[in-house]
Length: 313
Image (cartoon, rainbow, N blue to C red; front, side, top):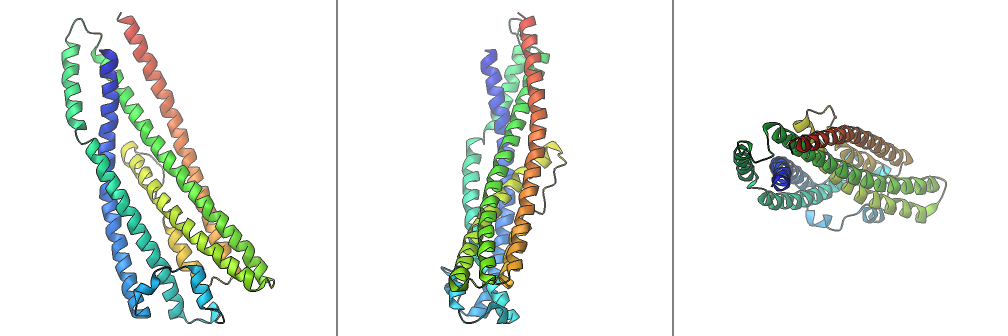
């Protein structure tokens, strides 16, 4: 009886956490989706004005634009044309982000249905607790229930930290992919500067196309990581700093496209990505340190509960 109820308490407490988490994520994703749609509409209006036909954006890539501009150096484009190119990149990024967020929203809404009855189950356990505490033949006592409840809370909190750490590791992996692509583009750019010719220039822009894909993936993973960090900050009063991680993708699209033939711009994007990697790594270190403290506390609670059970036999 003790083992069954203890396991039920662990599961229900974690489901209560998940229910609150999913509801908060859905609310944040709804807000983010509205903002991305607004951004997409603004860029679409700008492009319709500049291009006359947004349909031409389909299949757009850095490389395809490069080939369409052979014989016309990007440096010689006027400011309006440069802004239109930057808007094209940001438009495709907004479209892809909207697709990502809509998919995530559907996933969280489905997950929410699986834990919707957690409060009802928890109330049932509380009623069972009261009955068992007053049963002279039961090992349950007020102190034992307090320890079991604390154990369930700690285990649920550990699950939250593990989810945040997993999200951070995925973000780090995506950022390292972007860094590798930018490093390759940087190398081809250096070769191009020393007379590498058309092949090296084409390779540089192919690598930039690849970097753009990785940057999108990294931005998406960073957003998920930021959401997980917000969960921890809101529920654990953590001192972990959350904001500022998502701006680097905009920096990439605004900065690099303006003058992508200049080696320094690729280097700046490379350096910016390196800085974000450092920040994510430090955040992961902080999370792992806090998780270790929680694991030690959980072990202590389990030991105290075990001793209490043994003394009641």
